[in-house]
Image (tube, rainbow, N blue to C red; front, side):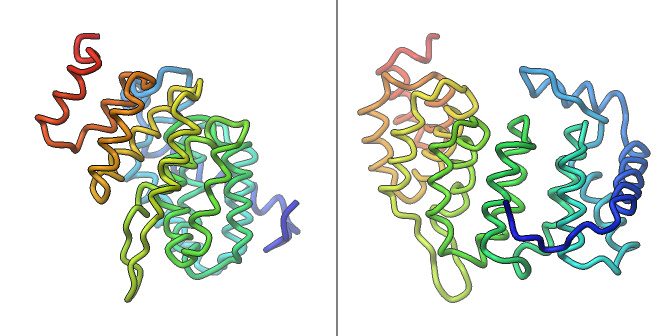
Length: 263
């Protein structure tokens, strides 16, 4: 399906790296962390019990010890881990292994791999948000010509990919890139919202609210107008996300207008 950046000629070696990383994760895990993390999910998620800062530390320590591996080998290791991961922290760690490479390495078609990962390896909102806000964000910073193309993800049959269509844009409403400033066309923002506002998946709906919230920083009047037009079609959680950064008086007016403050 994709161009091979680094053919895996020694699967045993990648398996050994994966096992090593699992040992490292287990060493900094706790049952208490696993119970705490589970409270943020309304469906079953398998946790080892490792918080994000420790996952980042494990990645950094591993990469310091395995400095001989290049960007393509780390990509191959990432895909090996994603294919075999049983715990949510393994997935997050796999993404973290390529974070420092994506800005200056790989070709544009890596974006197709990201879409494949979203549709086949992602299984909860934390996977989506971590991949979009960290990995894909760094990748797109160096490739602004690809940013708008991710709108196609909003048509995916996979809800995590549809959520990503919004989350991947939250840091690109207005973004300084070198000597220039990228502005995401606001028409695209509202097209995504129109398409996904009534999505059956609650995590997709919440991503609509998130996108509207960050869009309001640059397009407040347009967002308020959009909210007033569509407010009766919005779930309460979506609306609350969308109005979070608005003036308190405007927030109250919108909530009272719908009666959602009493739900």
